[in-house]
Length: 211
Image (cartoon, rainbow, N blue to C red):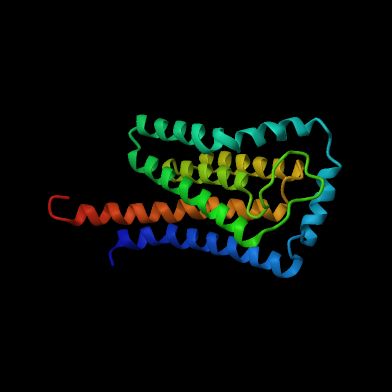
């Protein structure tokens, strides 16, 4: 195994670890709390319940950004187009594949863990809670942009955006805190695993005669 192969394995390992952690957290929640909250979820619920009412407006904006046709079509399409215009074809492919993988894993997790949402939810949503699709959406974009532009600034902005999305979900009582942690892990894991797979395929292609 050469240095390129060793380098490609690190993102795959971290990504796999993130996905395993997301699954493990779901199992832990199910064992300890059934379809309800862990102690940390109940504590955080009390914290956000005491926050100023005007913050709810910002949370509702993030709810709209991270859901529906905007999150599942227009934003992904826009990001893919921008990456292609910047001649970042590989990064566009990584994001597109990771976005599909992240969405599929979120839906699978909801079906498997069947966790109920908080009783005092303030928006109309009927699906199960774990993991958070909004948090996964934000983390997928943040991680894909960091893979494309690996700078501290990119990482910081992505982390803040993901934390803001996660906070908004708990502020609207749409999710428990651990739902958002699980969703973020899914988003990060999906991108890192897909990126490693694409990198290895690309390197294998370059080794072929005429590659």
